[in-house]
Length: 196
Image (cartoon, rainbow, N blue to C red; front, side, top):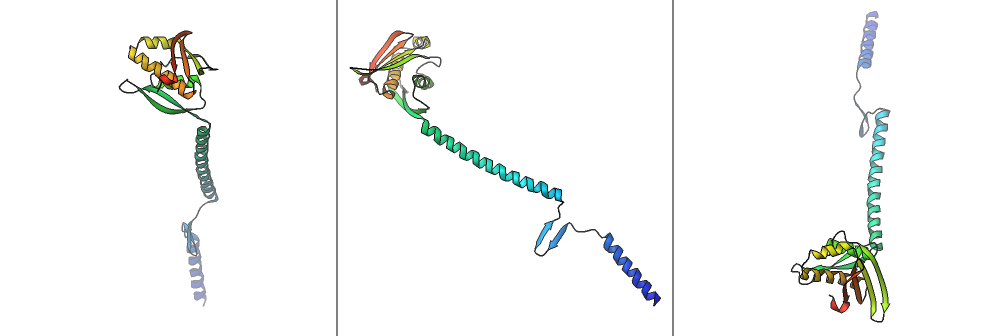
């Protein structure tokens, strides 16, 4: 019996040593879910990454909403105006509707410059409106650079340029007559009946 006791004791020790020396699996099985074992540090890092990813997605959505709101606000605050410029055959005028924050003589001259009707360096020296017996009259005085620009043009091109400026201002200010000057010197007078 001593022998059986010694054998049983030896078997118990071997089993115990085998159990203690055995390496654990990397997954824990609990019912239906197999989840990888993670340290608390790994779990914390994963959670933070997930939260930051959600914050980035929310920020992107907020930025998209903000951009849409800004575009809608700009559209509501903008003013439409019409710009006249030479057609391809240079025998008449085309028109294009554009938008700006406000309608000013400077805005119209900048739009005309984009269509090569005035030089890029042409500035508005003064602009005014008056109500007279003849109707609404506009007075536009442009910088000397406009005179230099006109000096490079043919007679036909000058006529198209002056018609474009006059038509653009008369249409957008709903005026009847325009007087255009360059550095205080008279250049052109037009009425709405002369224009497009």
